[in-house]
Figure (cartoon, rainbow, N blue to C red):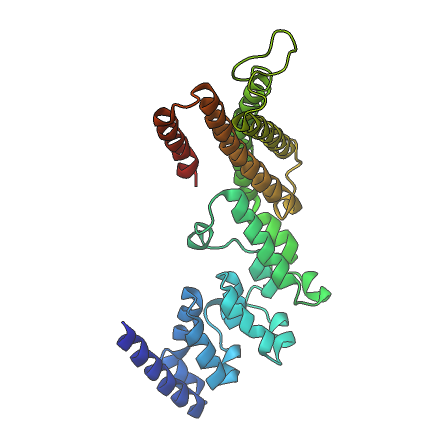
Length: 311
């Protein structure tokens, strides 16, 4: 494989030399130079595109299907590394103004829905929607305001085209968010209920005369109280985050930061709550089986299994 990589690199170098010598566009088309470049863009082969463009900078203006040039195609196929080459070109401003045969500019390309193979790399429709918004914002950051207001052949601005093409994905993201939040809210509420009750039914009970817990001076008891409290508070935070998701308006901009952030915080605190609950359980067990290490150690080992499996 290393030898094949070296040989392909050498072949590419000779190709670049021949391309730089020849300025005949017909010969390039007959030699499948353009189709090779656009195939490389589609497959995300950065080295190929970089060497070809470096060998002959004029090739940034070559066009493929629908008269789309290299960088709009990179935007369409969501190839960020290839698109990053545009920052080193002195013709960057001219490229962002170029249109295809339907008058779609580079921002219109960002507004089109990514191919399913690109979207499936990201788990969950909501996070897919977030990535699409991030990509659109990134392309929008390098273009002039005039480009954002340009109309294509269907009389749509880039943002309008984005909304139209991502309507179904946004609905799927909303449904995924609601289903996940509903399930996690039930789990979080159950943990809150249990840990709240456990805080007032401590292992060993209370001294009948003073009302002080019997094992108050035990280190395991303090460990139990601390992690019981942490589990209760983190589960409460998780429930509040998921309730915030369920009551959200689900606008496009919400998928950019608000909803994913709430989902990440909610899932993280729920996981932490479950882990804290297991530690509190082990601490309570060590109090009840004080001195019975042959029982405590295997149980603590088993308690680690569900926490490790959730990774």
